[in-house]
Length: 112
Image 1 (tube, rainbow, N blue to C red):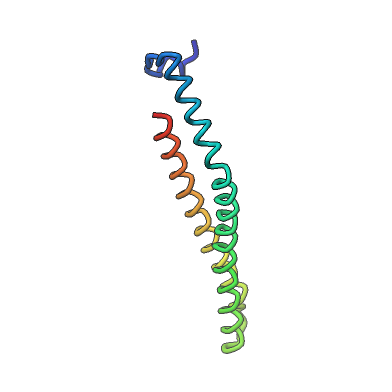
Image 2 (cartoon, rainbow, N blue to C red):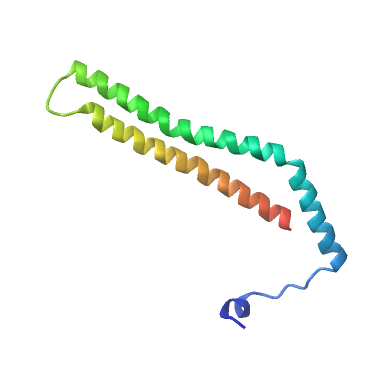
């Protein structure tokens, strides 16, 4: 036996009929939510894309405006573009981690 299997607590296996019933229920639930997951995935891709694009574009626009109003040796456009990109990436990470956590909790609830 491996070290991992030694450390896991042993759970009694449910009767075969309960196990088959639970698998059938999960399969039916997955079949009902096929269209929802496709649209959900497309919506999530859009959300991630816009959550990065909008702060990046806002940073670039603000930087261009500052460069026109206050010309100097520094490029506000480049600096604020990078800041907007960093904020957008953080924002995307936040949404992805939030949805991942929700999916894991739903999976744990369904397994019980």
